Length: 179
Picture 1 (cartoon, rainbow, N blue to C red):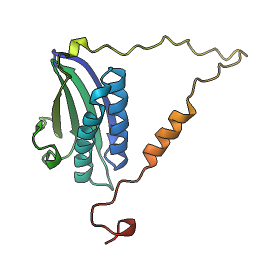
Picture 2: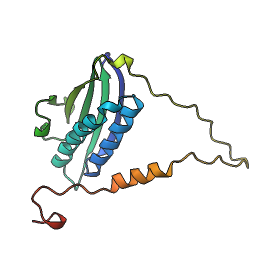
Picture 3: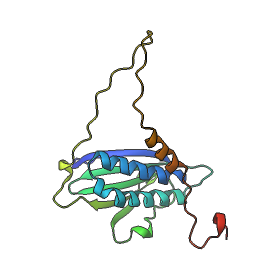
Picture 4: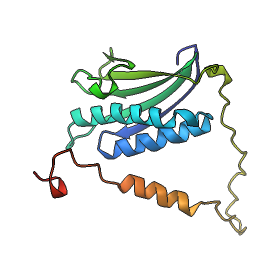
């Protein structure tokens, strides 16, 4: 981790089309945790474009792994996507005009990134760390009743619907994605 990096979070994904939906949910969750909701839409768009570019280049029969990483440092949020591909990384054209870059990694694989500015007057050290509640250790197997799980059924409904959502067909395609 860069010494200037204040916070970092990452997620490892399989390079399949479902990785794009997972990237969207991960970015939105992390930025909510970091109290940066105002960046969610833009950051999610960037992350999804980077992940989609890697998925498009990967072999769907033998998909590799992707690491999606969010880093806060200075006055920026950096979105990184690392893969193990032998092909050179290609930053998507949809991110033209943004502060982006790509490089082949020394041990193999690639790294693509996009840097976004934090809201005016904010820097990484001012972003609050997420608060975690202290959890009780699991009860021993000795006859005590387990506590009911605090589960939000609506959250899981939304999660499943996003994971199962089909990618949109390319423009100009006919019904069911056929031309």
